[in-house]
Length: 97
Image (tube, rainbow, N blue to C red; front, side, top):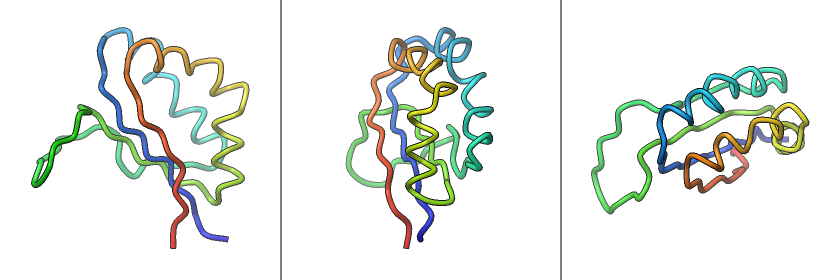
């Protein structure tokens, strides 16, 4: 079974609230499900096109079942409003090769 990746593209509208309500808490939920960050924020250099987001995160999970279990977990769902209330987000799970 291939690894799966959660790709989050976000337009953070309230940086301080996003950090305190979500960003400082999410890593613990990811690690609890065997996930890891490949990208978490960082400087972006736009080469082509336009991206309506100011933050990108890519998380790696052992498989799609685990990625979905993380997303649907009580741990993650208990903090998800901190992201939803402070950032416009496009969130996808993508299977690796």
